[in-house]
Image (cartoon, rainbow, N blue to C red; front, side, top):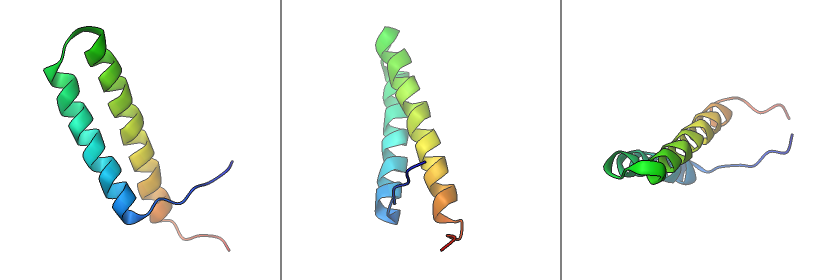
Length: 60
């Protein structure tokens, strides 16, 4: 599986984007809300995986 590096500032930005998307999803309705919540879940998953990767020693 290919890997990418996410810097701490990029990770922080993704976390803030996930929070903003979550708030947006709660303020809109209909299909837009459903899609925004799906995007929020994807962002949270990416953030969690990046957090784990950034705290796991690399095998060089």
